[in-house]
Length: 236
Image (cartoon, rainbow, N blue to C red; front, top):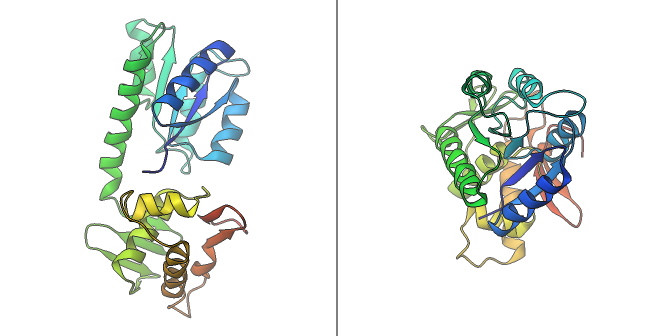
């Protein structure tokens, strides 16, 4: 499986380093920020799968950042775990009422933190698994196994369907062919590199099958030279 990216937001370098090492050993990819501004930049650039957020931060509190993320459609569904020394019941209630997914108090056990992260990611993945995914007028419904563009049906094979679902759930991130293989085909399957390229071409062809569509959806599947592929609404 591809790595989940965890953003660590804490103004203490020792905490960031310790949590980063813990996450690396647990098989996650981590990125860190020491204040709310840097955290917001990292969220926009890296699209983390989960945020570990300290309450007390220079330049704005963690709870204010959580509130802002929940109001923004692009970040509203990113899971957040508060990682803070504020241990009172009132603090926990306030954090959870702002849409935080879990609350871990300092000092904490690294093993417990990893367990909490995995639990939250599983819960979020379970919610998203059957949720209809939409970008502009492109919609993928996992339950009915239908894809439409401007309400017109798009026909594609099962592998391309899984590939598109993976991209829609991980927009703006660049994935190598190995990551795509692990996520779409599974880690025990061996594929030649060009096999993935063939399925990418088939996916693009299917997405261009509605000629009167106002957006060229095939161009949202972008080739990143020397790195792999990404699905992005921004120009490549």
